[in-house]
Length: 151
Image 1 (cartoon, rainbow, N blue to C red):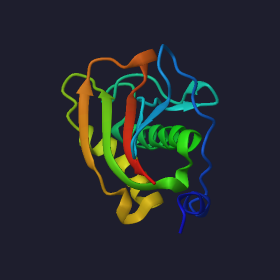
Image 2 (image 1 turned 90 degrees about the vertical axis):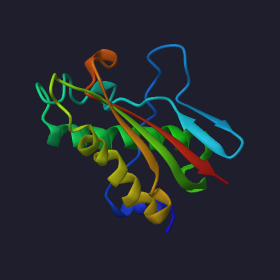
Image 3 (image 1 turned 60 degrees about the horizontal axis):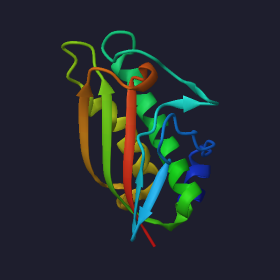
Image 4 (image 1 turned 30 degrees about the horizontal axis):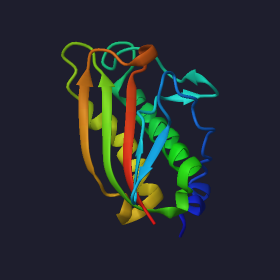
């Protein structure tokens, strides 16, 4: 089943690609790899959540936010090469704006990883980093970037 068909089956629609907040592009292709810029949890041009995970944002809510970040990253891939040209998700990097003492970053970034598995099946299994940080742009709780292999 194609990735776009699977998204539809899951009841998901790719959002419009989020406009860059600074001097970069949403995604770049080199050879058979596409690298996305870090994607924030934007919905209709606004953050879906703000604050630190473990303080203003619960770990459970942050997991859903990470899923949204991954969906935005897929939109960037789709706009550049077409989502159905993805043959494998290679790497996911998730950044979690963490309150002092919060160490559940892997569980938060699972939101992104699980979405990719739902969309791509076995080709969605990937290497990953889940990193706690002090701050993210515009007070976002999570930022996700992808590397995918394409035809």
